[in-house]
Length: 103
Image (cartoon, rainbow, N blue to C red; front, side, top):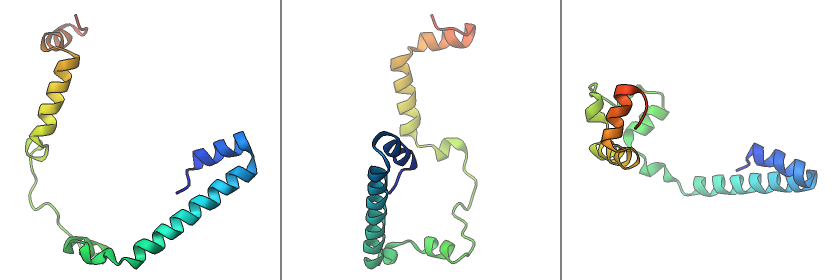
């Protein structure tokens, strides 16, 4: 819970006391969160393949190699095309492909 860049900036801007306070607070928050999550015993909610992978067993997640079009949801592809069309209209895209610069 401690960002090293923020720690250096706090040290440079406000001095070592503020930086140490930030460091100590971040470590306490991280330790309390770790202890709390450990007490909840959330392992029972994991899928079986995650537990097998944690034990070191070889887990084959993908049984077959899927082509790119089947791996990428249509929503992402369609959304990308629609958003690109709003920023750069199709006629500009064609011009860009033909000449190397948009009209």
